[in-house]
Length: 478
Image 1 (spheres, rainbow, N blue to C red):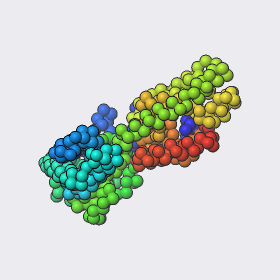
Image 2: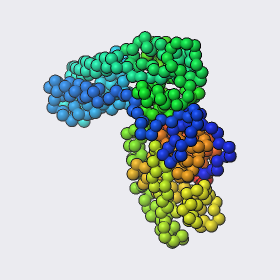
Image 3: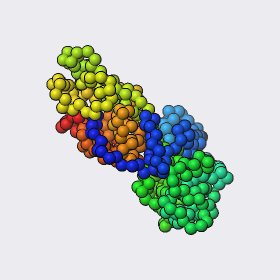
Image 4: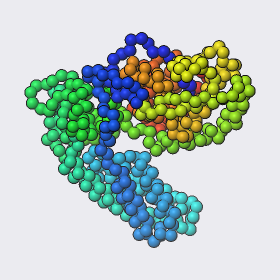
């Protein structure tokens, strides 16, 4: 949970399709580096969740009001609406497939409506036995809401498919030239899938004919700007183009992994487009949405209330033993390369501003007092960062933030370092719970941090927080 510290090894590695640098970095012009122009970041075309949510709300309210036995329970109808909305959100039913179809989601929609009605009936039977729902009312309520919801969802999906067929989104296909051209031709033969390939990204040219083959970062960048590309179809292992895919994701492109050899429909997160099995690649997506922010506020708020007496004691002892200025403020780089002021208890007094900005680690500093070394060894000096989390500058879990000087240096040396800034920086992270604290490899941290972002889930955050709490029992400091 403490600030990381290591000195970069000499001889940095060149960046493959150099990842778009954060704002504090100077430009580094490689011939084939991919950099999306500043100020031109695009947003992937995503279907709004509002029409589907409105359909479900109308269905719940209508079904509740048409049954006399339910009309007496206004709170029950509201609870029914909220219950269905939560269940559908959990099942990602407000994020429809690329080609949404009612029949694909019909079982899930009806099952969640039935669960919500059964839960409502159980609650009423337990707390208001005299007003319990009869079996007839329960069956009619489920049937009425299911019919209304499915009819509304079918209409919304039909309209979306028509829009996609009339205005397919421009796309790039990434992979071996021959395979990519074959996949692109299949998509062009099926415009109703809503995707229109305009170019192929490959290491070398293929035979004559087909779409233009883009072999350099500048050509890819030009194609995105000129064609308004919103989607990328990947027909090779994504790991081969990791830095480039992360740059495309930051540019606002929606990434899809396409299996060019298997037309089968796999229900485990895959969809069918132009007869190919496809699945979304979560690289660089909006992982830290409402749920992550809710967890941050809840955990940081609760911890601040819990440890506030400890914070006061630490501040008082630090003031007595080391004089005024118990709070240390330092500029760090956060999400999207934006600077913020990080808070810590002061355990070391730099000679000047230059040392504060460029000195890597003060772990084990001899002139630190015994109490300051205790704060660093136990990570208690980091507790003030809970305020950064509460204010929204940081998250509880994420890549550790660093000073602008080192962000610029590491981003030029280590491929993928700048990609860490796709998400809010955190007090702890996947790299830290794997022992990457103190003088450890920056390259390893890049890999762990980007893996965390690419595979983010709420459960992963909870696991990292639990592992961090367990690690505090055996602190090592930084």
